[in-house]
Image (cartoon, rainbow, N blue to C red; front, side):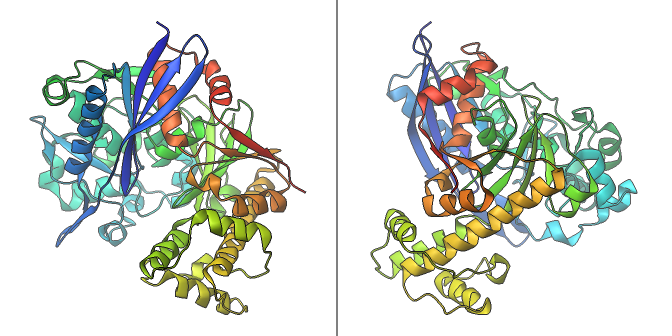
Length: 472
């Protein structure tokens, strides 16, 4: 077989996309084409904030219908989403209720219940799992349900992470990969297996679906998918279903390196061949999670493009003629010392430009007057904070990384990335703006035997442009 066609269903917290991958086995080239993009919103009720999984699922079916209408013969599909959140599958096979969103205030109401139950501090739990325990962590949410929503919890046969809710709806198979429980603190970092002791105490041991191996076929689409889309028994691959892990897995480098997955929110860190879990990393807020290929991802979250995206929305509503391309070009030509601290900017404000100007003033600078100058201040601030966090990580780990990759939508923010390279002194590689989809596609090709894992990096380098920069 000379061509394989696979479909990545890459779902973010506000939008999703279906991306086709066309792999030419003779030329060892992968081409991609987006076939469907959609938006979805949280459901707000008097009892909380939930995910509208039905809308997301219907749009997945629509992506499949579009592929079918275009005459695409699919060899495989796979799904990646955000981490932590989950849904319940009832004992009769039905989905129970709406999956709670990590933004739901209840996640902070009973935040310490889990630590009291396990008899361990947050630091002790981190040393066991590599994940720094926060309010939205899966284990906390599950224990809350057991304590305060017993009818829901007791009625469940399985709990499944969000990407695997959709795998279940497509196939009837419940499962998981290693990346989601790892970032959620439910995995033993030393063994790479679910922590049986914690699962037993939380009460989820008999409700946790089996782990499948990354790069394998875990299920096939079922009768309903055939009836709704015309596709019969399409293989579904187990991939790094945490979207950040999927994005990092797409980076074509077998060595250890630093990375930034840049978008509305930014994640950054390193890929290493050994687990790094210690008090120093805990103190600066880093997680260590297992990747599907057996490597380790040391990561933390930082500010991202959200703030300037909110500014752009405001300016466009006001009729201002602004664009990311124009802002970037201006910032590359106009240097400024103005910057602000993101902790001084309320994330939910309606007038984000005014909030950023106020933050500049609080930091001792005159407020930028034009959108272009405010973008320069934003670029300075994001680059400064990102570089500091990367250098802090190097200092704590006691090792230096020569290469830094920037992937995701923010890879196009050259004014930010240029400064990050200069501030860190790293050799910078920028590209793969749809990295989470690409990691998804590559894992599918491995699962169906179209490529070997060790071929993926070379295929990526041959198929996609990655720009190389050097720091001054």
